[in-house]
Each structure stands twice: as structure tokens, then as C-alpha cells.
Amino acid sequence: QKEVEQDPGPLSVPEGAIVSLNCTYSNSAFQYFMWYRQYSRKGPELLMYTYSSGNKEDGRFTAQVDKSSKYISLFIRDSQPSDSATYLCAIHNTGNQFYFGTGTSLTVIP
Amino acid sequence: ETGVTQSPTHLIKTRGQQVTLRCSSQSGHNTVSWYQQALGQGPQFIFQYYREEENGRGNFPPRFSGLQFPNYSSELNVNALELDDSALYLCASSLGGTGPALILFGQGTRLTVV
Image 1 (tube, each protein chain N blue to C red):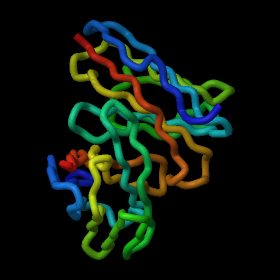
Image 2: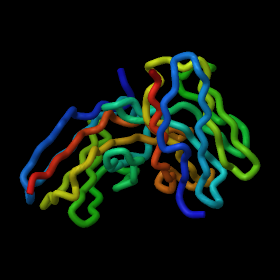
Image 3: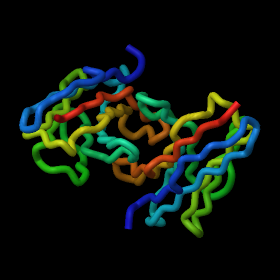
Image 4: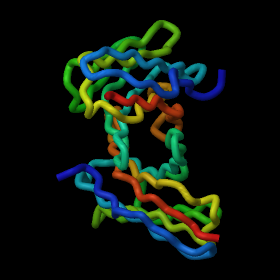
């Protein structure tokens, strides 16, 4: 079983739609839960992170963690064409490495 | 210097050759990690260096090796290149002990093995 499983894409939505991106993880000891955004031919950039169950909101973005079910989600409200990118969920353990999901490619159509 | 800088941005190598990729860490960062991202996949951890010592390794063969220098810049060396080594190689730097939210990724080096 992989450490992190991410819902496969690609996703294509109209501008203004609500987007839901989801991952599950296997190890209940994982502590940090991250979402990265990666534009084509670029490195990942941190979008949001949390280390507890519940919701964390930042503008149009909401990260949700449910540790009881080992499920993490990212919601994007009022999606914009500039949100078109690949979104990677990542888990960071107490050691020294990230475990990344495979990524979900999102296209927001004007 | 701000940010993490990787060089070259892309290169093409022949199967069996050796390659060296370079990473210049964010100023003040003493920890560097390398990741391999195959097309359509998430990054996979190769190894990490902390103060010039290897500090963890993922599931990669010994032909993947690294160095970290006193100025905390780093190299990734890959010997006996295989076609499956074609990927985006990412360097990430941080200051040890500050938590994952402060880890910065470079733009990557895209390696193509033919």
C-alpha cells in the first residue's frame, strides 16, 4: 500500500466552480499535511499545510483533514483560470521526507 | 541569494552515461533533499543531506549518490543512466528543525535519457 493515494484526474471545470481534490494516507503517525501547486515545468510551491484534523481556510482555498479516516481534501471556491495547474497532496513524517500523491491536473475553463 | 536554484534546467544524456545535477540552496538553509518526479507522478524522495552528511535515503539504488558542500550547495550524481531515469529532478532546501512548511523547492532539472 502506498503511503499516499490521490484521486486521479484530470479535472476540467468551468470558471467559478467549486473544486474538490482528495487524498488518503496509510500511516496514522503522519503529522503534517500539505497541498502543493505545480505549474507546468516548474517546481512545487506550497499552497497550504495543516497538522491537525479540521479545516484551514486561506482565501478561496480550504484544506480539510480527517485523521480518523486518514482523508485529506482541498477545496477551491470560485475557481479561476489561473488555478489551472497540478495539485499535489503531501505528507511529511517526523523524519525527513515527504510522501507525495501522484497529482491531479486541474483545468479551469474561462 | 533568495530561493533554490538548480542547474542545468534541462539536459539530454545517453543510456549508460553519468550525470551531475546541481542545487544552490536558499541562503541560511543547511538541509537539502532531492526528489525524482517521473512524468505524471508525484515526486519520490531520493535522499537528504544535513550539514554535509546523508541524513536519510529513499528506495533508490546506489548509483544515485549525492554531496553537500560546506556552503550547503549540493550535487546529485547518477551513474549508468537508464531510460527510466528520465524525470524532473527537484532539489528542496530548508533549515533543519524548522518544519516542513518552510521547505523550498527549486524549479527542477529535466533529464532525458535516450
